[in-house]
Structures are given as structure tokens and as C-alpha cells.
Length: 267
Image (tube, rainbow, N blue to C red; front, side):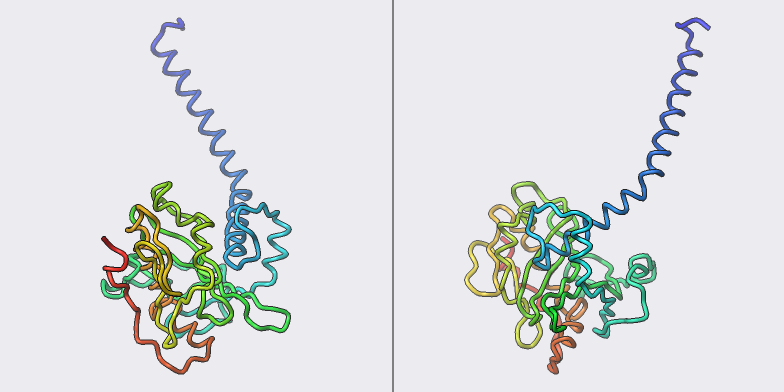
């Protein structure tokens, strides 16, 4: 056929598309295992950062991460009872499609619509077996996106050790600063819950004035409000509240989520 033939042009284009599709498909299949390994490694490193075992921005090899992560107790937590479930494989929790329940509008402080019944937490202990850090996965809604992170509490399960936000779509330079180590460092040592086990920590507009307040990010008030809602939910009765009370041996029942006053975070 002539090079100017429309039929020949379409035939060549079709063949080229088929060849490219085959190459892309083969590449995706062959690299899938590596992608999964990298995803698992990235998750481990973020957990280790939350636990204070890896500095922000530090490069960590898979071998180093695995060695540090070996010290963690991977615990499946039943959020309703606040107990650790020993007969469930942590790997199965994330795959369980029936693990989620729909939240009522009143309970949905983090604005996530559904919440898991069981969650995997990471407990780091010292050589004597005493708890040093509890790393809790958290998820909530910011201004533009879903916020994914890890909140780490000290061994007293009352004060914050670290916080890490590893996945979000907030505005760079504004709400996106929630993943800036300079800002997350402001959380360290802050009081997360009061003596009754109620969440009290919150991001405020402007400068913090108490040990349960975090400096707000200029121009990112609504993202800060989303962070507050997120930690409030996960430290409350529908999140890890019952588990934390059980681990503290707290005999005082929690009285429900302490929803932040909108005047503190919104304007």
C-alpha cells in the first residue's frame, strides 16, 4: 500500500498501540512485586519516624528498617472493646471488606463516613517489656483531601511522642505544611488526652497558649481544623479511646469525643 494510504496509516497506528499496550502490561506485571515491596517499606519507615526511631528525611535501607521494625509489636485492636485480638492476622485486617461500619453524622468527627472495626497498631517496648511508644494510624479530612498519618503516644499513652502525615493533597506551602517536620515537631510532648481519657489536643489559630494546643499554620486554618477533627476522632470513643484506657488501666469511663469548639479552629 502507498505511504499516503489511510488504511496503511490506521494499520500502523493500531499495531503500534497494541505493541505499546503489551509492553506496558508486561512491565506492570513484572514490577508489581517491587512496587508492593516499596510501598511496604515506605509504610514501615513512616511508622518508624512516628516512633522516633528514624529522623525526618533520613535515608533508610530495607535492611535497617526491617531491623528496627522487628522491635514493634504489631497488634490488631478491636476498637469497640478496646482489646488486642490475638487470633487475627494483621495482614488480613486491611483486606477484610466487612471490617468497616458506617458512622452517624454525630459520630463522624473526622468526616470519613466509615470507620474500621479493627485496626493495626504498632507498640514499641524497651528491653524490660515496658511500653515506650504506641503508633496509631489516623485518617481524616482536611480542606481539600483525605489526610493519612500516624500519631505516636509516649508510654504514658497521654502525651504525644510524634505525628507524621505521609499522604494528603493539601495546598503546598499552606495546608501542605502539616507534613513539614518543623511543624510536626511542635506536637512532641503535648498533652493528647485529659485525666478522664477525653481528647483535648487541638490546632489553634495563631500561637498555642497551653500544653494541649498546637500552633496553627498561617493561611491554613481549615486544614488545621481537619487535623484537630482527625486526632479528636481517633483518640475518642469511636477510635482508640477504649484501647488506650484499657492499656492505661484507667477505671474511669470516657465520656465521648471532645469535639473542638469551632471558635478555636475556624474563622
